Length: 86
Image 1 (cartoon, rainbow, N blue to C red):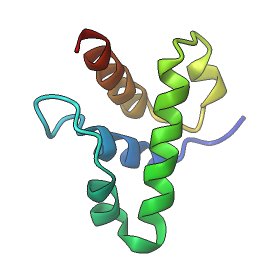
Image 2: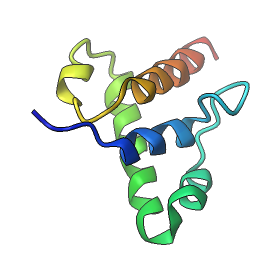
Image 3: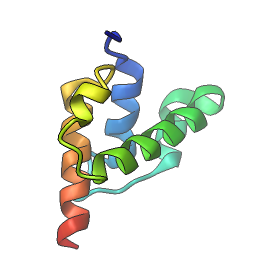
Image 4: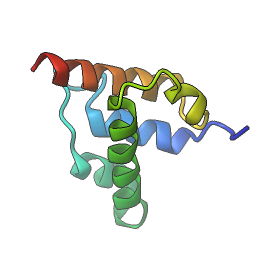
């Protein structure tokens, strides 16, 4: 089993805007500002891939991504729910 990756969890939260914006605001620049130009782009890309996987509606998302903390999963659920309503 993979260990939780706090940096990836934080990147997903930053990218979606969870806890800092009133509605989802997917923003690579926010991730790059937080993690720098060396790691930020790769983390933003990972967040986009994770959202695409989550929005596929799989009930197995959590088991496929044990490296994500609960806060990242909540952020993706929030972002995807808003998109479905939108």
